[in-house]
Length: 303
Length: 258
Image 1: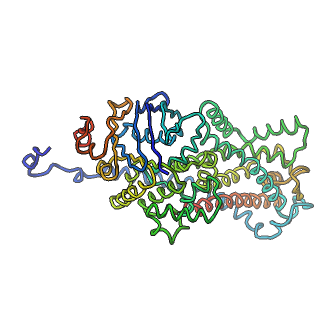
Image 2 (image 1 turned 30 degrees about the horizontal axis):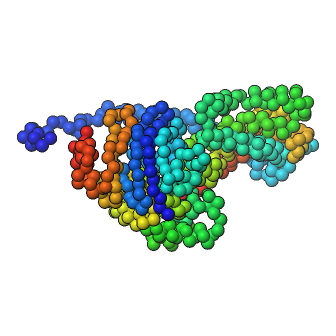
Image 3 (image 1 turned 90 degrees about the vertical axis):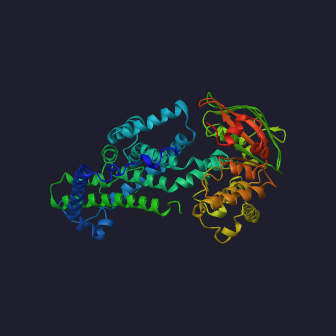
C-alpha cells in the first residue's frame, strides 16, 4: 500500500466527476417533476370535483337539524323535508355489528398467520384470505342470500347485511393486522422469551400492545370501506323510510340504499336528498378515516 | 445462586444445516467466559443454545447435552420457558419494550410471570436498576418511556430487566457492539460487578473487551463458509492472549487471520 504514493500523482488532477456538466440529469429531473405533478393533479381533479359537487348540491340540507334527527317517514318524493336519521342509524348499526363479528376473527387469523402459522395449512389460510380479498361485494351478498334466505328460510334483515359485510371486512383487517404485527421487531419477542415469558403472553402483552394503534387504524379503515358497500344492501337490506333499530326484523334503511331509492325519482326534493345523503356518507367515512389516523398518531410508541 | 454449565458433545442445527459441531466446555459459577471468533463461526448460535433460545427460530434444534448444575436443559421433562427464566439473556441491540415505562420494562419479566405484589415489584425494580448501575440516572423518571433513554442506558435497562427475574446465568450477545466507548466502559464495569452474583457468558467481537472482562476465553472458528463452526480453544483469558495453545487462536488474536 505505502509504496505507491505522491510521485505517481500527476500535476493536474484528471477531470473529476464534479466538473462534468449535469445537464442531462437536470433535464431528466425537470421532466420527472413535471410528470409527477401532472399525475397528482389528474388524480386530485375528480376528487375535488366530487367533493365540490356534493357539497354544493347537498350541503344546505345538512345544515338543518331535521336532517340529522328525522326520518323520511310519511314524506313523499315531491315533498321537501325529513332527514336521514333512519339511514344513518341503519348504516352505523350494520357496520358496528359487522365489526363485532369480523374483528375478532380477522385479528386472530392475523395472529395465527404471523406468530404461529408455518407450513402448508398457513399457506392455505393466507391464500384463502387473498381469495376473499378479491371477492366482489355482490358475490358475498349473494352467498349470504343463498345461505340465509334460500337455505335457512330467514327474512332479508339488517343482520344478514352485516353478515355479508363481515365477509368483505375480514380480509381487509387480516391483511392490515398482519402488516402491523410484522412491524413489531422480532427482538422484542426474543427479549420477552428470554425473560421466561411464554409465547401466548408474549403475544398478548408485548406484541399486541406494540401493534395496537396500527391494528385499530386498520380496523377503522376497513370499517370505513364496508360502510359504503351497496351490493349487500340491494340484495339483503330492503329500504324503509322509517326508523328501524332492530337488526333482526323489518326493513332497515342505510345511506347507500337511501341514495339509490331517491335517485330513481326525477323530482327535485328527492334529488336534493340524494346529494345530501351522499355527502353524509362521505362525512361518516371521512370521520372514521380521520379517527384512524389520529389514533395512529396519538398512541404512536412514544419516544 | 450462580450455577455451573457443562456442555457435552453439542451439535447445533438450523434445519439440516449443521451450524456448530461437537462443542464441549465447562463454565464455573461466578466467572465470566468470553466467546470470540470470526463472524459466522457459530458463537452466537451456540450461546443461544444455553437458554434454549435457539429453538425459537424455525428449524432450530440441537444434539448433545447442556447441563446446568448437573441438570440437562434438553431433557424431555424440562420446560424451555423455565430454562429461560433461569438463564437470562441480553441482546446485541438494546431492545426495551417500547410501550412500557422504565419501571414497567424492568418489572415486565416478573409481572408477565404472574407477580402482583406491588411492594415486592418496586423493591426488585430498584434493586435491579441499582445492580445495572442505572438507578441514579433514572430514579426520578421511572414512569417515562424506556425508549427515551440513550443507547447505553437502554442496554443497562435491558440488563436490569434480565437480572430482575433473578436468573442464575446471564448470557450476553455482543452487548456493547451498538454502543459508544463510554457506554461500553459502563457495561464492562457492570459485568465485573455482576460476576459476584451470576455466571456470565459473553459473545464479543472486541478482543480487548474479552481480555478486559473475562476469566476464560473460548475461540470459535470455522473451516470454510458452509462448514460448521467449532470450538478451537478454551483457556484462561491471560493464557489465550499471551500464549495460546493453538496456532489458529494465535493467528486470530494477532490479526494475522484470513
